[in-house]
Image 1 (cartoon, one colour):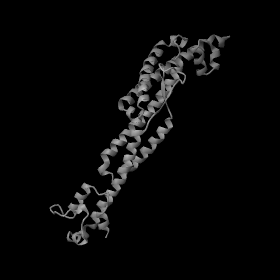
Image 2 (cartoon, one colour):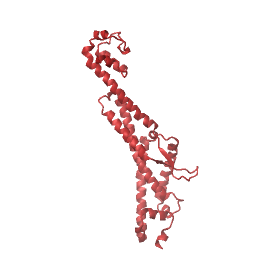
Image 3 (cartoon, one colour):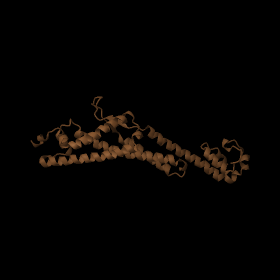
Length: 267
């Protein structure tokens, strides 16, 4: 009988058994159906034939809930263990002057996409009701990680670009002419280097993808964008002063300015 198989389901938990006892009107009975020690005659005495469909539905729900919970645990475990790939920005830097950066963004983003697709499937299941709070918590964690990684990636790109501009000894022409921007970048740079040392020491991704970190990246990205805009305005001024500079790229011009070699172009 299908009901016998349903009652033997290993995925039935305490709350499922309470539902089954209620369906079979066993609330006031001493009969311990959850111990799975019963005869067909004992089941018939509780008119299980009339309640077979409801009991089978509860058993099916238990099986499907276990599948969803297993998938949810896999997602949670993935992000309990997922680490950043942290490398030295300058491989030749001495131990007292190490600057770290992140590598292999695509690997993290691919894992994120897989996890978000899986959590979406779980959310769309008709059996998710009992798990919904944990599922929503995990989904929100993934969204926060995704948003933080997106802004972090933007930040690192801008940070590396500006570090090449202002990362010299501070005496170049561009550091002098864009002193405010150089100081603003230095403040962001110092704090970020301190944060990256902590990331290097403890690389678990989700630990560093918090709302406060996301807000900080959003704020710093606006700052770096404004700094870059001012740098580009300064480059336009130099081109107006030295027309030959219109024939070289921004990167080439910045390279010359950081080394005070504009006169070489003019000659």
